[in-house]
Image (tube, rainbow, N blue to C red; front, side):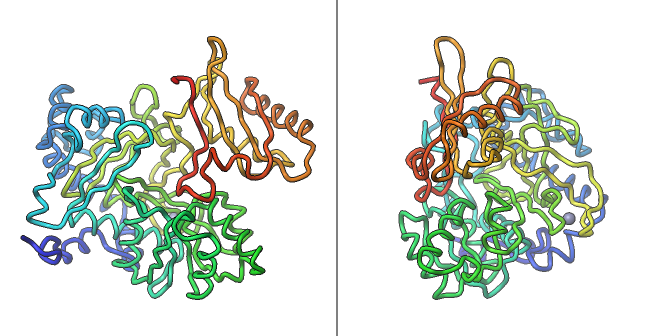
Amino acid sequence: MRRPREAVDFDQLEAWYPPAPEYFETAWLDDPDTIEAKQLERLQARAQVAAKVPFFADRWQAAGFDPGSISTLDDLARAPSYTVDDIRRSIEANPPLGNYQGVSPSDAAHEPMRVYMSGGTTGRSRPTLYTAWDREAGALLTARALYLQGIRPGDVVLNAWAYSTHNGAHIMDEALYKWLNCIVITTGTGNVTSSRKQVELALEYGAKAILTTGDYLLHLADVAQEMGVDPTDLGLTALPNIGDVEKLEATFGVPVLDSYGFHEVQWVSVECPEKDGLHIFEDAYVVQIVDVETGELLPDGEQGAVCITELYKTGSPQFRYNIMDLSSLRPREQCACGSWLRKMAPFAGRGDNMVKLRGVNIWPEALGEIVTDVPGTTDDWFVRAYRDGNRDEVLVTVVGEPGVDREALQTSVEHALKERVGVRIGASIAGVGELDALTGFGTAAKLVRFVDERQT
Ligand SMILES: [Zn+2]
């Protein structure tokens, strides 16, 4: 049995993936040739490892892809991509772990391992086994993002994400504790530690950041105000919270830098202070953008689904995973911050939430943006897709400001939708708090903004 210090060669890990803060003086500033040479070398090694995993071996054989044939980064596009549906099928055929894991629970006899799951509201959840190396590397990458977003060694940080079977709260905890020397107060969500208590703890301990959704953080600002505390007096110095950037910045007086990551691959990219796209940690990932429907590679600048290959794991590989999050890629160029790392656009919604309404592709997140721009609305919204007879319909509900003329507001919202989307979309106006049961506001870590009732 190997102890943690034997399971991970920390000198090697830090040489390959420099941690913050030194990362920003080293690999962050690599020239294009160095970036791509590292990527190619790591990609070739990852292909050899993934080839031993049945999920990849089967798919690659069927597609005629030879893992030994990668001689340029462009060759990656020849490997077949896969989506969550393929993973789901793999789990159904080989429950509970599927055949895409590169390690098995029995390997834990030799080194510390963890399992986390994503999804699970419908169907089986998708598990990923993480080796000790994968945990450390994932935490190191997450810490890079948190550092750029303003968290510093010695800071007290509230972690208000849900500590559950999901990776999210845990990888942030590990990043803060192991790679940023922060004191973590593990409050969990509002279900576990009341919002009032979260505000009290933040004040008592002088917390510098509260990790949670932007929406829940704004809710905590309201709670603070009810307690007679101005949100700026909470003393937060970092806002690693994803949500309404303008509102967060105005409420707390601190800049918000966006970041992107997900369960299986952990932290992928972060915005630099130029606030002009998210730099990808290219020593650990190759990001491609593919067509949502065909899976074909898209040219730079076009919006499509994010397809990720990680370059750092030792456990369960992710090799051309089409996660169906929407974004676009920038051509490689030097940023004013000095970095040549390629940039991706901020998360623009889910590709698989797409609703085709009378021939027009519609994403709920885009509708949310349109309706909350209409004067008289708040930033709380919900989209429902349903069948009416034999056609698809979408209803957008948005919460109006207290005392607003609902009928007039409904007309302006419908008008804005028609003008921006091009097809008629129904709207309704709700009162403050009326959508909470649908969105999980104040209780869930990740707000639900969309329900598709067409299949039920
Ligand atoms: Zn930059």
